[in-house]
Length: 226
Length: 412
Image (cartoon, rainbow over all chains, first blue to last red; front, side):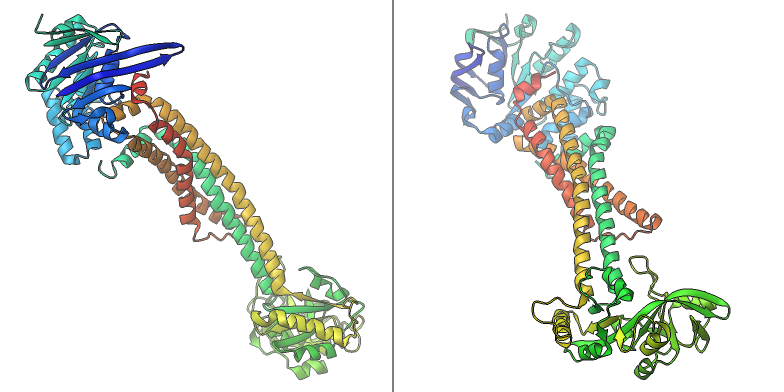
């Protein structure tokens, strides 16, 4: 589904040049559950940003189901993020003014889904993540685990092909983390392609494939549960 | 994206902070209210000046003896026209000019008027019947003395409403009553229609008209002798011929008075219409100036909107990053924030318009100052408030749309 060839991305910080991605090549198949691990600064976040269409590589090719993502303009990338990608962030990134349902509806508004249909879909998604009784709650009225569930429901709003999660359990306690990871696994079993960026080994070990990064390069790529 | 969704985002953000939004819009409220009020007051003043000068008679020239003396106050010097150089013959000659429909020579002064024990001081003018045409006056009862009476000097008088009220009381018909002007007895033959106050506060109904010759020989004989007159009112048929008539009056009088080319006139001609135009232009300048000063406060209001929008963009950086991550295009972000600024400014404009109109009405009611709220006040002030929102909202919105989503999401 995803093919990366010789992706390069460098940042200049002062007089130092950082090779965030130093020629990465990688294939990810539909339905995979991938964990990307590595110390901070190893390039794993940059990889995620490029995969999600938030950033562009300086060189190399990014093929997403036959589409050359690296060559898209800003508007095409926005549409790509809207329809193909679901993002889950460490800090949830819910809009505090909006209720759970309204937060989940947001990506559908940008996709042009009709009000009636998007309300229906948002409610169904919240029920799917176990928040059927919290529809009208604001983020501040919910626990961290509940907020992350709303964020996951939002990421699924436009039936994305790829879910990108950046340290999704980083702000949660162990028990809640377990619940969120189980939710991810369940979604993966239902066919969703999942890529989790983490430096938490417990999180990484639950993935079927683990890719380790160091200094902008892939240092290992293992399959199978350890 | 469905139309209207961005407007809903904008309105949602505005109502989320009602106090802040109200204070942000306040600058525009004050600005628009000030512009509407100032314009209304200025236009009111303009109308008052126009009416005041029109009250003297439209399409009318006033000829006075002596040179110079231009300007609206000039004709008041008529009584002081000691070196009088205007005569009945001059008036007769002016009557022959094409386009002239009425000519009334006049003598004038103040007199004590006594009737049945009451007495009153008033302006008395000795005129011919044409005076009514020249000054656009009409009678409410009785009749005007005729030309023969004007020339023979019968002791009859036509009174203004104020004089009637002061001498005989409200609602009394004085026709046929005897009055004394100074020591001379006169018979009341007519009453003038009320004209009300002139713009300069002069009571135009405080007047007594007597035949020209009666005024000259019986009342003001010490100041005017023989066939002298102190003023000649000349009425042109309409505005189109007014300026030609003015030229012709000048030429004819120079000819009659044998004034050589290069020599100064020994009379002066005031064109009421051109005075009105000049005064109108002056008050218009005054109006524009007032509106411009008020407009500055509208601009300041716009700067207030820009300031808060910039703060808002900074505060909502993460929201902007999130919106971009889930599929908002840069143009969506730009439109959302621009709409927010325009909506705030427009709402301020609506409120400002209401306050401005209310304020103008209040001022004219309490301060006895005419205010004319122009019809274009609504579309123009609302249009301007939207433009202000757009101009001052553009930069913050552009800043929002240029944010890097990765950076924005990372912001705490």
